[in-house]
Length: 109
Length: 115
Image 1 (tube, rainbow over the protein chains, first blue to last red):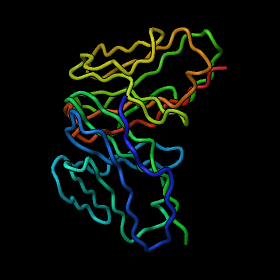
Image 2 (image 1 turned 30 degrees about the vertical axis):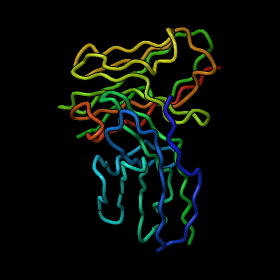
Image 3 (image 1 turned 30 degrees about the horizontal axis):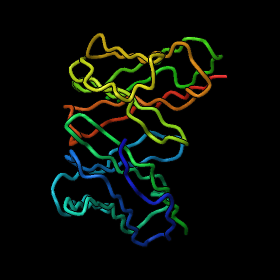
Image 4 (image 1 turned 45 degrees about the vertical axis):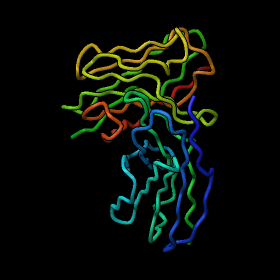
């Protein structure tokens, strides 16, 4: 199997910045995606990184370092509606997809 | 666009019964994915199709599970016979292209309970 490591839970306050890390096994790696899932809902796509560096989309940014087998999702100006689970997912060997176990983000007033 | 459509949304059945889950991908998408989500095992890819052809079914847990995609607008995931450990939320997703760089659009899921 594959091992993706991400924290199980993170708590932050409204307006703050939070970073959710993800480490993965390198072999066959093509790219790293991030998905958001609210309780009772379906995952929705946030970002994809194949090359090193930072990709910014509004309040959310995603970073990848292929040499470190590491990426993170950065959420800025946190809002209550950002309370959800966030999953990193790797694409490997052109036809394999693996999701991490998810990080539950709790945003408090 | 209606998005990915799954039916039924909820299914309660008894152990040993056959269960069929259905999925209609977004029109124009040529890749379709079936996932299972449980608290214990998280989100697992079961199988995915590209242009109606199964590309990777290594995630299918055992022979009791089978999936078909007879045409570009319909897919089924069948469990026969069902067991209590199959209880989970099953998601279908579709994308333009098979690569991980393509955004996968998830359906609302089918919550399966096997008694």
